[in-house]
Image 1 (cartoon, rainbow, N blue to C red):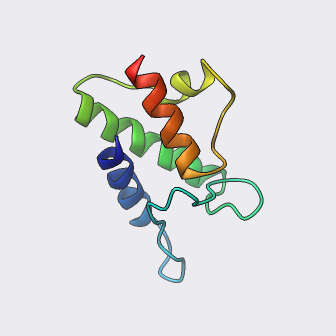
Image 2 (cartoon, rainbow, N blue to C red):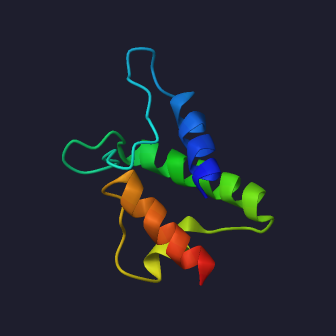
Length: 92
């Protein structure tokens, strides 16, 4: 799971402007909302990259939105909360 997240972050970092600070794999990284690092387009890019990377790791198609919407809300506030829910949903 973490390998796919790290790869997706790398994919998104390649789309950032030079003056933007790269995204890190810090679980406390705020993705959206107050202090969030991603705007709406950045979030979509991250989700698409994450779906592709998760499919590579798991060997099957993965819909991040479907996984997240089927449970306890949409935890895009931090990278750690997103990872925790993805782990929970993909293991069940």
